[in-house]
Image (cartoon, rainbow, N blue to C red):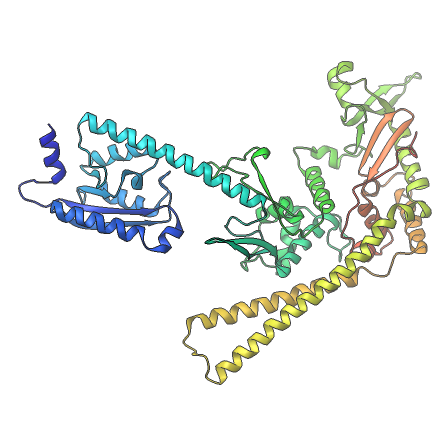
Length: 562
């Protein structure tokens, strides 16, 4: 049996030379660039074929692809050719079985698939026959190859996670708003880090500003992802590649912690793309583009807009406080209920939904008459929150940060103008060199360089103009007199001509109401939303446009009661 197997391997079939295909593979692009491993594999396989008297009819080269799966272009092209009838070659030759596959199950699957079409797989360093003992030895070797591959991957991932924790970049394309720079060298390895790209970072800031304050020219409310995408595309604000924005790319920017200085590495499984537990993430410290308070405020807005958290009926229902009123004991929503009074008439009240659904075991539950709670909330907003002196105290820090933002933005405009000027100067020198015959017009890289410099200049100029417009829209400094005017107009807009309440205006002033007891409630809101609402109510939209830092919330715990 061994003799016959050897004859089959040699291919001595009535003197006809065996037709062979070579499969050459390296795991990484760096190995392919070094141009050493693949030529060595080819040389050894060619010597093997020459010794056997076999004819080489095809060669499939796989530069920089892992053998743990079959997502390899050259591999698939080779399999497709081998499965045609009749097959153009009778054997596939590899340096070692690990070049073909490092997954034992997949290896056996393809070996059997090839065998059905009369094509054999041969390793020049692991030359085995077809007898049961050889098959068993091959399977054992494949198990060891698979184990070694997984161990190597584990150690490589561990090193990359530590590299990320030290603040270095592991490769791949950086998030928009950043660029890669060389940070040093350790031995033969060049260490890289992320730095802020001033051109595209401004686009990131714009996206967050739209999500937090809306379109300043229209005095709109905070915009959703779809509206932000449309806003960018309508104004020809392109992506980094010069393309149009999509909902997914805008959502990724608004949810990526990289922009607050925490880039997360190892968040998903590289094969299944399933998310990994947060404990396995490695966090690299990078320069922040936005503040953490802005990021948290955007996440809160996205969560509030999500149908999974806020049913549409609670957003658009007719009841004044539905969707923003909660039980302080259990956190459950206070929903509308009806009941009969002692006189037999019907009345409406807010009741804890947890108590209504689960009984007293879920929550002791509170029930407050709707008209009384509505009136208490409105009265508190009018008497306390909209009092000019109270507003001055609440917004003092925010207004100070607004001025700081204006100064930072002016510095950023200077940097953008400098970048545009430098690009323009380089273009002029390039044109002069062309006119003087110092540069060959046939140089293929010339067109790309001109296009690159032109794009840098135009993008910097456009970003500087947008930034300047944003500074101009901030308007004059908010004073005690202007706050007094704001509060008077806002008070008037809380009520309609018929004495009813403006639901949307109330929600802009207070984003959450907690009922502690029948005699105590808590009102919570965002200071930036408060300033923006006051400005919009007074038709002075510019008053809040420049606010870049968001103090988490104002709370009126001791001042609110029913």
